[in-house]
Length: 426
Image (cartoon, rainbow, N blue to C red):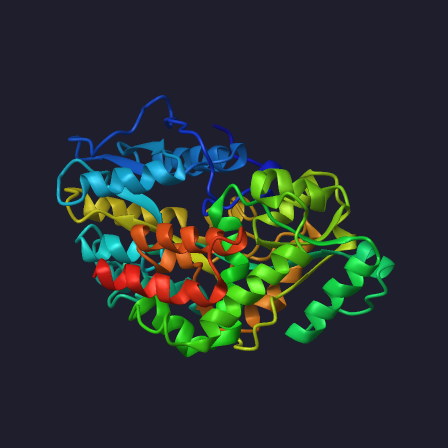
């Protein structure tokens, strides 16, 4: 449980990635289940952690305990789906943790707010000065439900990573800044015998990223937001049909062959080994690419050119359970771990750019610095649809997406099918 040095600066995977398996671990030998009856003992639930993140959690818990004599913390991790299910099961009961990590999107964190599973932390933002601590972009996900629900932990943006050598081989001399330039680059890659972009279809959310961005582009920011908030327009907006049509074209023309039968981990290998030129990935991908042997100076990153000015991605935060009897202690813990000192110690473990505005960008991975102008280019972000939609709606969205991809449904049928499901389950 010694502080991490170089390994703590490797954000190998964002917690937002859909990982499999359940790993239950504890800090200092104490396993966290539900909230402890000990007034000075906190229980924390987290999503799946890679080894670097686990080490950083152990580090900052040890630091908190050393700085606050008599206080202890235990944590428990869950796979993505198991964490969602566990939070639903404890909703409305006293069996939940004192603090939990969760995604901030309306279909996830928003559901916790609606279910009264998130304490409004406005008084602690005033007490600790948290509003001045965090970037405005990271606070947007915290304040979207009124008040201050949660405290920022990461801001994970997604964009197109590209292999500079493969772009050069195809005669592409600059990063695409419009959709027409992007598809022209894809055509040039195909002509050069290079797979333009890689996806793994066995995990629905991987291909979903392209569909989300196409809907943002063809429908525009306001309509795209309405689709997932007001749940209207799927059957009437022409942009929905255009997005599904273009998704099918990309899959048939630009994707790696056999994408529907491999996972995102397997398809990522095509980018690492120089077979595929692009990957639609997030800030966590910086370390993945380097860890898999790529030269970071030969990798570029540019936002998917939707033309709306919004960035694609999601926030992740820590929330306090209103049923906890240790809310003040939980807030003290969150204040400690999000301090400039503690977040600097773990910089790069969780995301390329810290949500704490005073934490500098790490220098270990040159790709981290590429995200600074991208993140500064927009104050607005649109969520991955599996965070904006409810669980049932997401499942149907994926079913329709896959039906279009394999030819069981036409693009024209996709939007009306989604709207029928929403209306039937309202």
